[in-house]
Length: 297
Image (cartoon, rainbow, N blue to C red):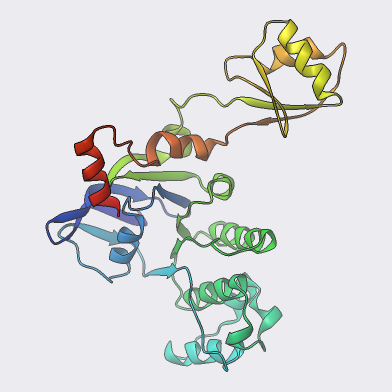
């Protein structure tokens, strides 16, 4: 295993932030860590980075692990090139060429720290981490503050690193992006493990997604589906049909009168995984609400 969390418990005073959490991350994979705010994700990341102590259990890694938290800042009057050169000297004059090429920071080597966008700073942080030779990279909310182009660039970097055989653990609320890049997932709820494994395993018993149909005439399509006794709803993106209606049946009903130009799911796979295993518990009694408020405030 690249990373192994074994019965990890982390406490703050008498309160357990994380309780008896166990999961593993396979080498050469991108693994998602999901959970609501206060679920214990960042607490685990901080423990992995050695910033807080475990109350019990163990965290093991097969290689040196670099943990990157969102919001890294760099000296305003120092260039990216100078920051990389300094890092190289600290590490014993390592050659930064491979890391620079992997992240594309060569495009802004002369930029000062004060001028770096969130995406640039994120790429620089990954560059500095890769210069250590690490095979395991942990990213905490890496897409926070990135524009769509920055998210796409980060995706390309992560995919490239995985293709090189590196292991990447990603903690993020960007569920659509995680669905694209992750092969496995761990979910936390209230500081406890709720699910972990390959995406195909964790999602095996989830409800199916509904579908959104886009047609040449959504008004006509909607009325035709209703006339045939099929449950349908007009939404901004087109016509939504329930998960229980076979998509082939809906298309067949419409095919003689209107062309279906696009079919998509109304909720992605990782959104449904999050809903089942990562969303905050519903406090349905006065005592439960009080406990919930104490735990997650």
